[in-house]
Length: 296
Image (tube, rainbow, N blue to C red; front, side, top):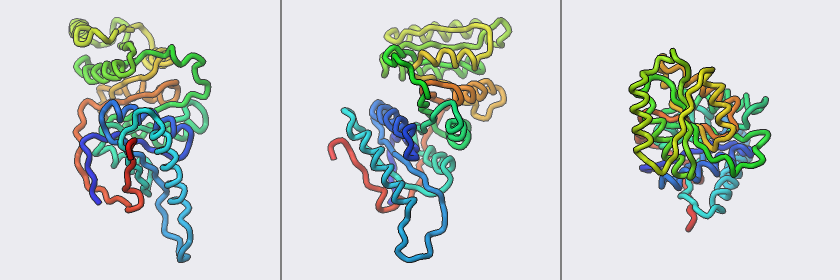
């Protein structure tokens, strides 16, 4: 069966607590975007058991975690249309394929630690550098903030030339308005940062005037950009950064993203400068192509 949606948020799950946190975050994004929430579980691709009638343990487990994830979303006051999908293959490759028709791809991470390093290395970092859609990595801190309600900031990280900042700030403002938060724009600091001062000031003024309802504070101090961003994210609800997009002129974005994937204590949203979903045909397994909704 071929399915196409004009707006889709894809979230990859593996049955972990971190993945369920990612599903909750992705559901809120799907509601805000009026999008379908596509929950994807990927099992290893291996030959079928030669014994006739043998149970498929991978599929049984996958369907179980899909049901658990859908249950988390359905219990929320606002629930998007849910599309659970079971796939086989390599996780990053499957999610990259899903990104071709998605507005956003979401994955979970346990943050710093041995397991966090493994997850980041195998999935989150790969998607952050190669996905055609924007990617959100929902970090689950090992030591959460004792006062999460005070975390009311969206951090926008500006890297590369000034003319590439617009898409990051546009996304940060939208996310801040959705969360009723302010924006902290972290700029490259120092005198010799290579940034055109006049263009920077004009752009900052444009941002302030564009939406007076969203407060914008600018931070531009000397020091390593990645370290300054990690400090700011400790008080943040979300960090927004542009992708390097394999552009050698924007290696700073890749360096900061790498630091955030290892050390962030809040979700990290890596946004693309431009993304137009490319329709593709996806053959759905019959038992996984059903959908649920809040009213279903």
